[in-house]
Amino acid sequence: MEELRRQLCEYGRRAADLGLVIGTSGNLSARDGDLVAVTPSGVPLDRLRPEDCPILDLEGFIVEGDLAPSSETPTHLEVYAATGAGAVVHTHSVFATVVASTMTELPPIHYNALLLGGAVRVAEYATYGTPELAANVREALAGKQAALMANHGGITIGTSLEKAFEATRLLEWLCEVYVRALGVGTPAVLTETQLADVITRAFTPPDHPRRPRPHPPAPPA
Image (cartoon, rainbow, N blue to C red; front, side):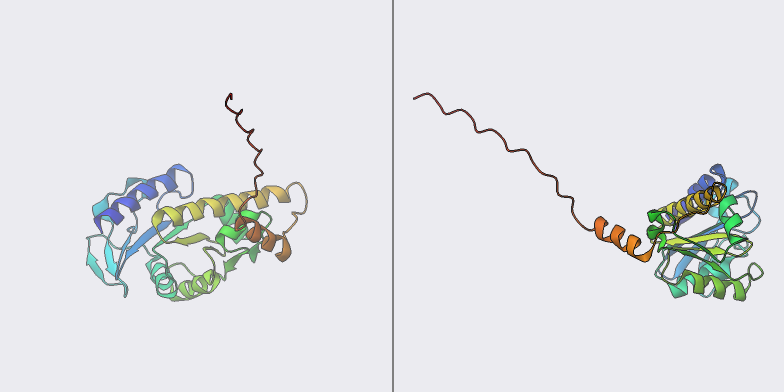
């Protein structure tokens, strides 16, 4: 778990540096078997030390650490119970929060949305840290790598902290593209057929023709 604690600090700093969180907002966790390391409550993510991050079991009991776990820990644990995720990242990034405060889903206007499972659902609003919010997020994440939380922010999962964090970066990018596109006109949403064609293309090896090599000259008789 020490390596996971170290990674929480690393990706916490990266989240702060990229403006995905501000102050003490946002939280991260990573799972190893029946144990979960989570960022603590009330500590800015860019000031974390590994020993600050409490370790819990899957029922939410603290196994190690002196600080209280994040107030969003119930949501993290609900996600682990419902998915095979190895890590969870929750941020209050600007464009994700804008979309989460105005939409019921983020439509796929770019094919990279497929990396998150297609259209991103917005979980129904509930007070932070409550079982109601945890249940809403679990429902919104079904079959997806990301969800938005109404009037709150975004949440992503992955098999590792690296993958969950990259999903968060992609979610924010997709939200920004959508918000900026609205300033120009009505964004075109990709159809199911178009998205299916992208999947087919991704799994079809490219056919690169090769120029025939000239035969070497025959040796002199």
